[in-house]
Amino acid sequence: MTILIKSKKQIEGIKKSSRLAAATLDFISDHVQAGIDTEYLDDLIHKYIQENEGIPAPLGYRGFPKSSCISLNNVICHGIPSKDLVLKDGDILNIDVTTIVDGYFGDTSRMYTVGEVSDEAKKLIRVTRECLELGIQQVRPKKRFGNIGFVIGKHAKANGFSVVHQYCGHGVGVEFHEEPQVLHISTKKSGMRMKPGMIFTIEPMINVGKADASVDDTDGWTARTVDGELSAQFEHTVLVTDSGVEVLTAGSTV
Ligand code: MF3
Ligand code: CO
Ligand code: CO
Image (cartoon, rainbow, N blue to C red; front, side, top):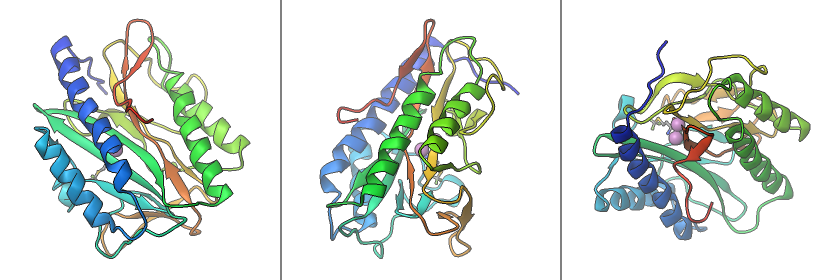
């Protein structure tokens, strides 16, 4: 198993792509409103990325039909934007954007809310954001990947939530999905050691109820909670630096 150590040139390219992915999530924020359908949001995302000299990586990736993943309420990830999915007050959603700029990939997602959402939804979103932040704090040279999933699992459980185990973070930059798989639930000090120049995502999916995901037969993509309870996710692309970590997809609003 080989984890790429990115060159200076590759790092610069991945930084530029990651900045565009983050800017896209900043841009879409004002458009997330009751009455808007998720295909409309996807159209805006598609146009924004193209206007900024990028390519939306999901479009056509293993047959994925749209330019972003938009996952509503009980959808864990890989939701397909659709005219039939109209936002309403109280909804929570994840928008996941991956850009290609000059051949380099940046991958990030965050949660949005529509109108007033439940206290449970607010807590889920807060804890999921904290899980990502705690995971990022475990990134530095010589540390093991397993520590990331250890702190995420601990924090989710302490708050009564569960961690989705079927989907992982991943190396990213030269391709959409590279090695390693970054587990969001794992044991302390397990896994490979991090080295400067590695770039990967951390993207915990946290559920209110059961941890399991089930993929819709109808489209082969949409991953839902098995019990219909809410799920949340945040994702950043991070670089292992000589002294620690740099978040490449930090936006202006998150
Ligand atoms: N962006 C997702 C990730 O974080 C992958 C989406 S694959 C797609 O890894 F085909 F659904 F776009
Ligand atoms: Co990802
Ligand atoms: Co993503």
